[in-house]
Length: 112
Image (cartoon, rainbow, N blue to C red; front, side, top):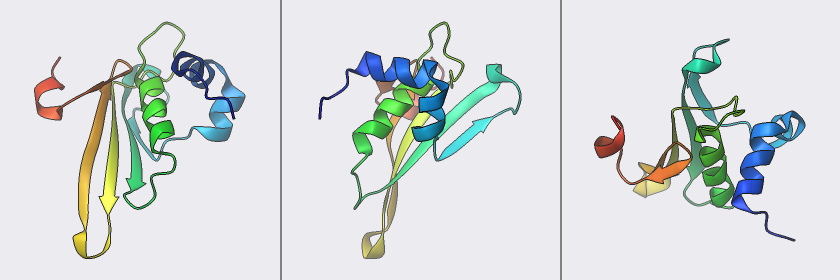
């Protein structure tokens, strides 16, 4: 299997409605319906014991928050949440995204 370049994946997610509809629906979105200028947050949730699509979900978050002309998705923020189950139950905001890039901490970067 040939690994797809990050820019090519972003381009396919942003520009190809058939690809978008078939494979990249996010787990949770926060937006104002019917107004693409108010796409606030995309959330991907992963069970800590099943991280098979972890890297792909990170790429989806990059693409959804990638701020370029022609990107009708253009969400302000993206977050990847990991959930541990069982005796060690925990919910962790693993990665935050803005402008197609990961940033380290929510508290320090939300107002940028």
